[in-house]
Image (tube, rainbow, N blue to C red):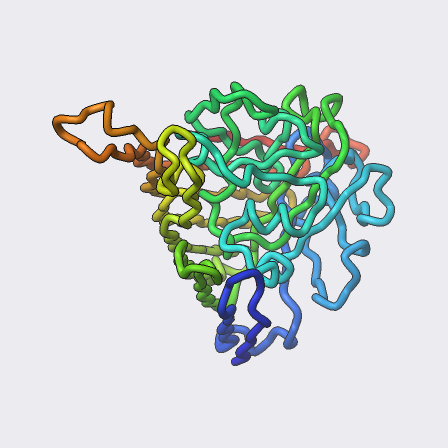
Length: 367
């Protein structure tokens, strides 16, 4: 059992991580088994008849990791890729001190930006932008399969106007093994939604152990914006050649007060710039099994529920003087149930008597 503590970062008081290794006595300390799932429109999943497995040491340089994003080849390491690929590990996400995936990526990668403050329902959806372009032009993949976008449209002017982005915060952070970021246009390979680049989230595929983490903090200046997140991840074996990995996350944040002076009244009581209050719970199950030497199946299922509300612009007393003689601040709320499922087969198909074979990858997705 190992207990880790990190230095407080940006108003986050404490980050703790509790890891138990009771179920992985046969695995050397500090190592884990990874299984790379296929990428959409790439040949990364067809390198061999069996599921590709790799034993990785966390101390190994990031540029030595095998990547499956932005290439048709197999076994390509980050340093060998002709495309600009950045790899963000789960440890880096945790040590960033951010309370959600989108904020962590914005802190760790200079090509990714997020809106510090949104208006109306824009603030209720987490969005990322690569190279300053529209969120709709950043392709988000989970193990190589497209992630569905939100139904919440952003209507205010700016690079994000008219977009319905993917909400990364509906994915449990504890389920992420690492994230591959392609910082270049990839429309020729993936389609028009990859003009800005690609963010490929690679899920954990461990078949042993359990990890539990809790993080909490608040605004260091006035104590507002208290937030907390709790994460859990656990893996199990399925027979002799399969795995089942499940992750969960609970997250809550209060309004972070950012009242500004209202030019109409001269008072400092307009909370329009405050961050929204949000409560979210999410689950993700990832699984795979090698049926035989030439065929295997894989899949993942996600579910998340979110309730959030954001303050709107202060309404002056003249709006409804009979009911609100001192004015009022309306709020917009959202209650959302988000789910998705991906199932697929992969392996090799014989094509002739000479022993030649052709790669097979077939999957279906709903969400």
